[in-house]
Length: 501
Image (cartoon, rainbow, N blue to C red; front, top):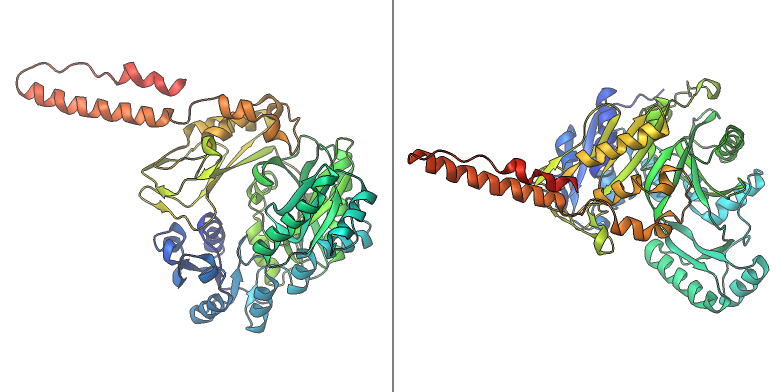
C-alpha cells in the first residue's frame, strides 16, 4: 500500500482549492502551481507550498508537462492530482508521471488513450454490449465518404471530432447542401483545438436529454455507480446547470443505465473516478455518448446526495486501496442542483467579463455550498475559463432545492464584473425547468423569456449607488449638525425598493 503524503495539484481556481480541502482533511500536504497571472490567486494562498510554473498562457504554465513534473520532484510530492481540464485527460502526462515514479491520481494512460478517442470508445462500448448512437464505425477521411455515410444514416446528423470535448469540433447538419461545409468546419476547429482533425458521424437524436452516471473503479476490478446527473441545461454544448436525481429518470431506467455504466467501466478496467455520459430520447431509449476519465465540474451534487467525498475516494484508489462502498448500500438522499457562475455578460452574447472584484457576498444557510476562488480586490485574468464559482444547493425534494437555489442566487452579490447570476435566477423561474420538462434545447426554446424577464442585471449596482449617495448625504448631515442644525432623516429606506423589481 502506497500511502500518499504530499499531492501536487496540477490545476488552478476553484477545483484546486476543492482538492486541497480534502487533502487537508486527510492530513496530506498540498502543493500549488501557478502562472504569472495567478500569483495572487486563492489556491496559491491555501496550499502548503506553491511554485511558479510559467507565464500566463496555459501552454506556458498549466499545460507544461515537464515543468510540472520538475516541480513535483523538487517539492517531494509523491502524487499529482490533475483536477479537470488542462492535463486531466492527457495520456502523455499520466505516462510521464509513471516514468518518474509519481502517482497519477486518475486512470492508466492506456485507458485515457482508449476512451479519449471517441471512435475507439464507441467500438469498446459496442463490444461490451452498451447501446451507442447509430453512426460511422470509424472516422470519415474524405468529404465524399462523409456524404455516403450521411445518406446511409439519414439526416439530421452530428459531425463530431474524434478527440473532441467542450462542444468543439461539432456541427449539426439538417440539409444535404450543408454537409461539405460542415465537415470542413468541424475538421478545422478540431485541428485547432486538439491537434487532430479526424471526425466521425452520428445520427442526431432530436429532443435529447444529456444524462451522465458517476462511476468509481479500483485497481482490484471492482466498480460501482453513484447514480445520475441531469446535464441538459446547456448553451453551445456547454453545461450551465446540473441536477440529481434527473427529473426524467424512472427507477427501472436508473437500474438499466447504472448497470450499463458499471459494465462500461469494467470493460476498460477503469480505476478512479469517471463519468459515463448518455443521450436519452423521449421514449427513454439511451445511448452511450462518451466517457470522461476525470473528475467532473458537477461532481459536488453527487457528493451532496450520496454523502461521499469523491476526491477522497480518488486518493484512496490511487493508493491501491479496495473500494469499501458497496452498490447495494448506496441510496439517493434528497435533491441537489448546481449552477455555474461565470464572469460573463448574458445580455451581450455572454462575452467574458474579466476585471477586478470590488465586492462579493456569497450565500450561506442550510443546504448551500459555494466552491469558488475569487475574493474582494482579486482581478479575474483574461487567460482562462471565465467560470469563477459553483453554487450547489440541497433540498429534501426537487421543489425545495429549486426554492433554495433561488434564495441563494438572490443572496449572491458580485460587483466589478458582469456575471451570469441573474440569468441563472431566470432559469430557476422558467416553467419548463420548474416542471422538469426540458432537454438540451432548453436555452434556445426559452431564449426570449431568459433575456427579457427577471430582475434587471444592473439593479444591484443601482442599490449600491443609492447606498453610496445615502452615505455621502449622511456625511453632509453630520457636518451640518456640527454647525448647529438638526440632522435630516435617512433617505435609504425610501430608495431600497429598487432591488425588488
